[in-house]
Image 1 (cartoon, one colour):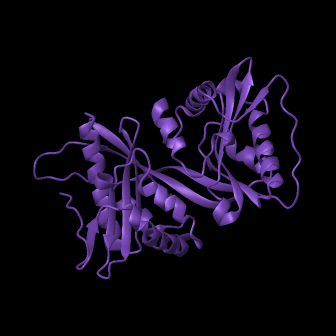
Image 2 (cartoon, rainbow, N blue to C red; image 1 turned 60 degrees about the vertical axis):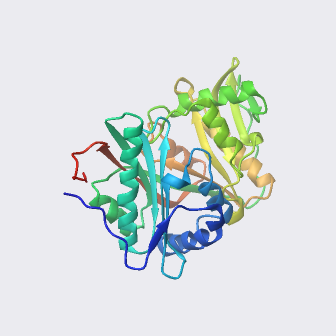
Image 3 (tube, rainbow, N blue to C red; image 1 turned 120 degrees about the vertical axis):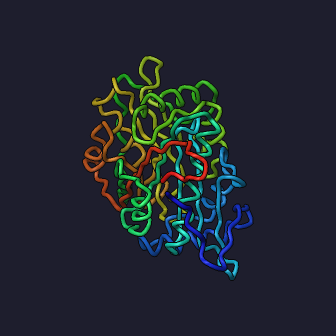
Length: 328
């Protein structure tokens, strides 16, 4: 029988509040530095995640405090779509605290599944390859690795050549009206359907998420159209401007029947040119190495290199159990 791990003596837990952002940033930055050597987050990002759309911090976030009141651990459980796919995040340098947080996020994941009437839920966690402690925690909870992500980067030491637009393709820069945003949402779902961790989000939720994201503007969304149909999409943001002075391609996809025509390569080189022209030191993106398209090879071919490796861990769990018994 599985029992929930206990917190060390003197530790307390409560929901995070917006006023916790600075102290929580300090804890997460120290945690990341211990694992990968740099903070890999910003105060703005931490503040946004505490109060982001679709996240109820009162039920789905846990801030563990040491006896001196400083954060010692943090975790979230974030339901995606109809909550049949759930992402958990756990961060603590104390193994006992981390164990408690993993147990608590899994318990909440099951609760989310029951609330939506599911028989089971899929739980994902995205973890630095170098984070041996958290990897061990997930393995102990019967997670297995489902895929691997590489953070790719190209450096800009001077102007980058602006590529010619593909023949017969219209480049639409910015999604400033309802029609463009609707086309972008439909194209994104078509491009990424079936990939690891992808769930189609209702349009209103998708719009709300982008409207509330402080590092994104609609001018950073680019569509490629053929005969009036959106067949490729690129969504950039400022997620790495503060930490690395780099542009960030948050999403890049091509509709299946239009792959192999150089559209993705055009969107990459176009982003490089735009970033270099605005004085960015480089451009960053993340790639799923198990992507059904040969994406990793594409990024390597245009001069990008891997800088950080993550693993996507996954477990499918039932959401019901007999009274008095806690499933693993």
